[in-house]
Length: 220
Length: 220
Image (cartoon, rainbow over all chains, first blue to last red; front, side, top):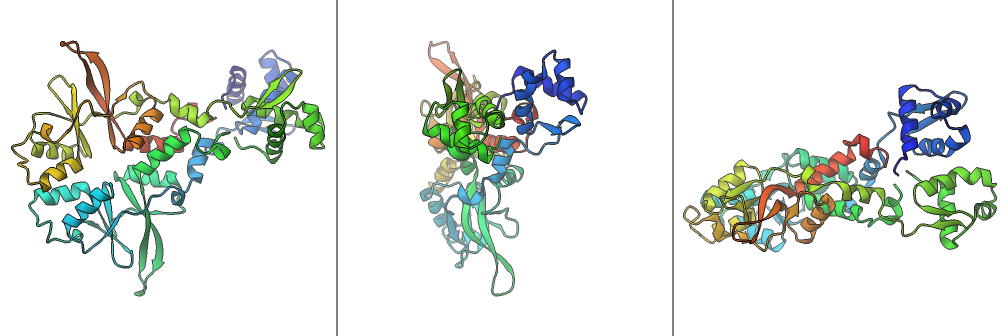
């Protein structure tokens, strides 16, 4: 919703001195009260102004997040995640590279036989190992991976906004999406159920920008 | 803006049979015309309904893009791009790797002495070369780069939505941001002025979600 010039003027007035009655606003703008009514209704229903009976209009400067922010907070990782590109911790570095190319991903999630998250490995981790003349066929991927508990994760019911914030803040491309459970030893473990990446965020950005969710996003 | 239950009902009615007068809508909902007026005003000003004098209300199913889509189309690549992480085409593959690590990027833009775009190289391109036992110190990066004209580019005045669409469609992480010019030989060339990546899109997503542009994004 784009505010009209008159609505912007009303906002400015009420920002300066709250509360103001409809009459006061009208007289400042040299308009009659009836002319202003639709504008005041719009501004109140949009949450920009707050109307208190017998007091007047307040500027709602601390109104919650904007609709776009609300929307980003409502979207859940679980609805936009990709299938996990995962390898077992015992595979060789070389086989992990092959998996990286065949799955067309930039990072791999490393798991054990129970699909429990053990680590992450990036293209650059492998490049370093390769330049360091490691035995790529003989060494397991677990030797060069970043290990738990130093892995940033996401949950399916987390907002995409929070997950995107983690990706930016920690300068990583991929979050393993996990479900937490207590394993037989009584320790908290994380089962890998997917991955959430900057590619997912970019795709979502494009879809939102192209009105792909018309029923919910159209009338922000 | 969230539609109220009554506003949703009005929309449903007008979707089914346009045009409808205010009186007709009111009688269908067993309300009087005055009660409905604010709702009809809201829906009209939000562009969901179109009011034609002496005819009635139409459902504006083909109303342009939603505000969120409009917003994404207004934001320009030039305002969100990063500094180009570029290497000269004559540097060795090994030196390119060093540059990739020191610049903390996943892809490098390859240029000539005039900053003209010559190619792109990814971490995976280099990993392939390394696994193929290439002489990384002796070979120039130009041997393994993807060459012009096979490079997907962005312009500074392009919308971030269009650039994000290119990233998704072509399954790439980085777009070189370029300015086109005619070089001395009369050929169109592209000077590199920055890079636009999935990281930029993700950061923008987070900023929009956190209301970082309050003046323009707050009252969508």
